[in-house]
Length: 295
Image 1 (cartoon, rainbow, N blue to C red):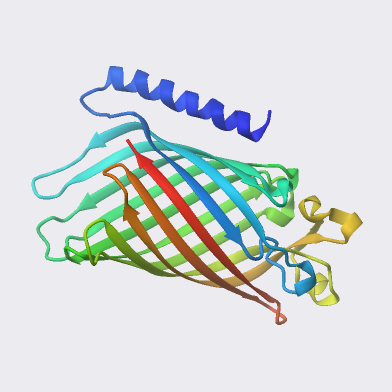
Image 2 (image 1 turned 90 degrees about the vertical axis):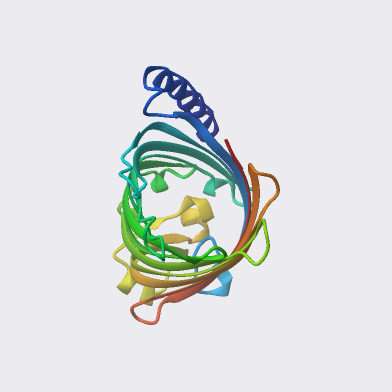
């Protein structure tokens, strides 16, 4: 079954489930499709390679649908709160390296609570998710578990900031893509005028990283696992994926504009710098343009 077909199948499941749940539990849930988005991505180094000979830029397109399966209002007095069960499905096509195409499916339990009486109006959020990545190259196929927690502060009507942490564990078909990553992050949003939002953020990632490159003695001695990567030519091209313990610093800046009450455009630029033992490292820049439609 192709990734595109699975994506369309899950869209249908989300729609059907939403109608059924909403019919049974109208007092608790507004189940159904909640939004669509289309993302255009320019990636300077999708292989996450260290040397120029292994670096090639790609462009890709991703479509995603999100849905709510069930929601429960837990609000008390001046403390809005809720619990929801959500799902999403996405399909990404890489225009330059088709073997990097993938579908992602995720279901999550999400909780939030807001302290409306505080001057900073802290908004707490926690999420637990289960997902599956279906790649055009089988070695990337993975089951994914993720957990995140964050708190958002809004000291003024035109500025807010979020601090949080997340953990992701990936169990792939091959050991080289078995990864565990922990991330801490700080982001800020500034709205100088109506409908326009300026964004900036910093993320630091601890844990495993997978890079694909022509093997060197340094790589072989440092890697926890190595596997031929057919997405970049495999053994014939002497391109191998290798698993490393690494740290990544990610800086991001961007802007969002509300085109209508339901449609938003966002432009985001990311700079990624990754380092590992034995002076192994790589740099990567990503430019993302996203159009979102909320129901």
